[in-house]
Length: 388
Image (cartoon, rainbow, N blue to C red; front, side, top):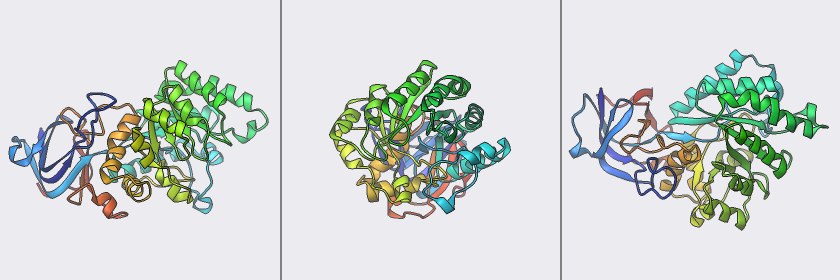
């Protein structure tokens, strides 16, 4: 059965010229005014001016509202236990996740998934990294795999307390039994390459082991200070270098010249009152930029991609077009997905209807719940559209 979303003030398609990535995936930011969109069999079947719209089995008059692709959140830590508002700036919840039952972790995870969807996020990545034992990392990736195919093994998050005097032993565990237990249900391998976490050689060893097990690398890089993380990500052909807060000229040049996406997480800086990444510098150099939430219980407990877009425009000097592209098509690039992040014909019909006439309102009205309805795979998944 086909569905026509008609009378759209604006339809953001990201169907512009393709300058990198999958030629069947997202292109540059593009939009159509006075538009319509047809969904059929879970895919986008047609987009264009409303006056040219073909007939469909069902029609929804969208009353002059705007549509954009579902947000693609390419960096989130959703498998955890408890809440830590009393120690907001704390980083890791290892004891809580080890003590929690599968049922407790699953209930928290599914609650966050509903929260993501209600705010327009239709594709998201989910990391392990709070258990840091073989058993707890295994169940973290297994739970994550219940809700998304974009599962990341992050055993190399920090060295847990019981290995404080034996870093080498923990690295052997991560590269050996822990990786073997987690790789079958993961797509990605990540490492926190940062002072206080893992150095370049340690992170390289973990990521190389992950690649040998068939996983694709991504790297937590340059969040707390300048360091080797970004250049390591580019060296290994990682899909994404995440955070990118402190960058040298060489780091920027490496990102601009390689295939690694710079994923920026301004919710962290907002939550921790830290300096924001310089998105303008990266964009002007020609790097590909994504935006993601980094939803986690310690340093950024928000799942709101609309908030992330607003922060990117307000604090990182991105235009509204750049920010919306980075939160949709950019996230798709960071996950190497060609089927999401855009609304060209053939794309997965992940569609967000805003209670506003333009994507600009995401930055113009920060904090206002603007997501009116969400379709995922062509099915209404959250909210309520205007009357049929």
